[in-house]
Structure formats: structure tokens, C-alpha cells
Image (tube, rainbow, N blue to C red; front, side, top):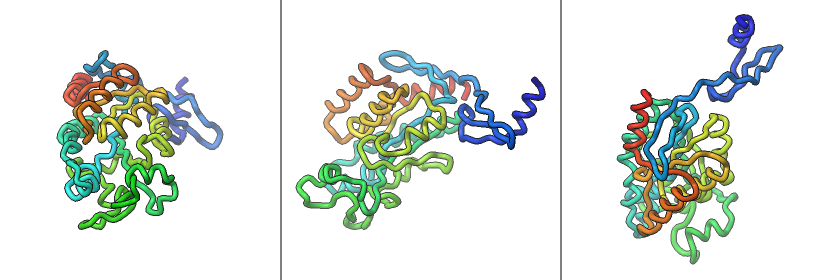
Length: 266
């Protein structure tokens, strides 16, 4: 047994997750993947409390971008009130450092379209420019000149207040769901993630569609209610919360999640 352990220790690791990797040398590929035991955190939630394994949990933060949440962004340019979409900022400022300290991956999933829009069919372009007039996807905003929801533009950047960290993971999306035609599912599976915490905007659109896709793929889904927001009418949030609790997962808040992390000793 000692020789077997020694041999395994001498091999090189292939894979990013402690829970999902191989150990290899010139003679052997060890796929047995000895995995860490669970780090259990019990979260007060509805309709039931949830015990998640912090080794297999990640938070996905959706579309907390200048275009949606900042003065001079696209929503502001359209004459809409962007301030509701800023409500998750303070709860996330408190929660994200605690999750990072607990080694829970922080994954930012943001609109980040190609400059040439060659993967955007007409129905997606129409969604944001229904009569063909005005400023739509990829077009420059007055003032800043930033291109709407274009990858690497100010418009598509995460709001400054949330201070993304180098160890965070970034995924560009180009549909309302963060799972459609993106590497998000592969990233989560390679990290051996089983439970996803959801945050961001808009609650009833990109957050909800991403959460339902995650549910269909078999993940445990937890919506962090105060870390989500929308510019839609209140009944849209009410419907989303009801449907998540009824069909797609669980609902809790940042304070409950922080309390669970502290109780778990993270």
C-alpha cells in the first residue's frame, strides 16, 4: 500500500479540480481520482434548507455589467431606470469575499458578443432593436463610444464596485441563458461542481433562464434573492421566485449564505 501511495504521489496531476483529475507518469494513467471529503454547509432556504458541499459549489454571477447597471450604459441610454439593477452590488460585495475565502469558485457570466456578430441570428438582434432603429448590439453608445455588450468593451465590463479578482473565472455569453453555446457547463463539470448559487440581473430573464438550464442539466440550483434584481415589474420577480421554489431549486439570501459559511468553519 505504501508503494502504491508513493507511486501516485510521484505522478503529475492533470486537471484543475481536487475532485476531478488524473495522475500520470510515463507508465501509468491513474484515473481513480482520490477526492476530498465534503465540506458541508447548511443553508437556510425555501422551500427546504439545503446542505451543500463547499468543495463542489460555485457561484455564477450573471450580467453585472456597465450596460445594465451603470450611468451612461445601454439601459440608461434607452431612457430606462437602471438603478434597480444595482441592488445586488452591496450584497455581493459582502458575499463574494467570503465565498473566495471558502475556496468557492466565482464565475462571471456576461454578455460579450463578437464584434462582427456573426454568431447572432436576426431574432437575437431584433430582440434589442425591434424596429431596426436606435442603438443595438455592437453599436457605439453616445458619449463613451463603447460598443453595446461587445466583448472587451466598457459597456460589457463588470461594474467597478464588484472588483473581480484574478482567480475568478470569466465566461462570455451571447444568449439570455449562460449555458447556451458557451463553455460554462464544461467548466463546472471539470471543477466537479454539483451545486450552483445564482446571482445577477435580470432575475426574470438571464438569471432565470440560466438557472432553469442548470436544473435541466442536473445541477442543484440555489437562487440568492437579494443578489438578484431586474428592471421588470415586480410581478416578474414574484413569478420567478415562485417558480424556482416550485420547480427548479431553492431560494435564500446572502446573509443566510454567509452564516452557513461561518458555521461550516470556512
